[in-house]
Image 1: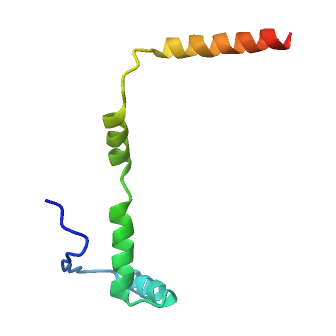
Image 2: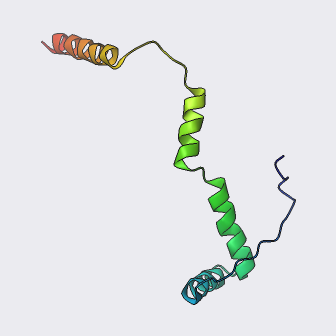
Length: 89
């Protein structure tokens, strides 16, 4: 079951390197946000961006077999180029 967008949950991070925390805090200040609000934005963007595996799985799920092969594609391109060459002659 997918939680609704208005449902919230707490997350605790431990052992964040000081340099990383300082960088994130500076970026939050630059955006006039609290560190918490900034991190929610960062994590939301990350969660909303599909991974390459997810993109490929989505493409695979929507593909419809055509029955054509790579050789069929090469032949079709060659035929189109030959026709174009004939038109220019």
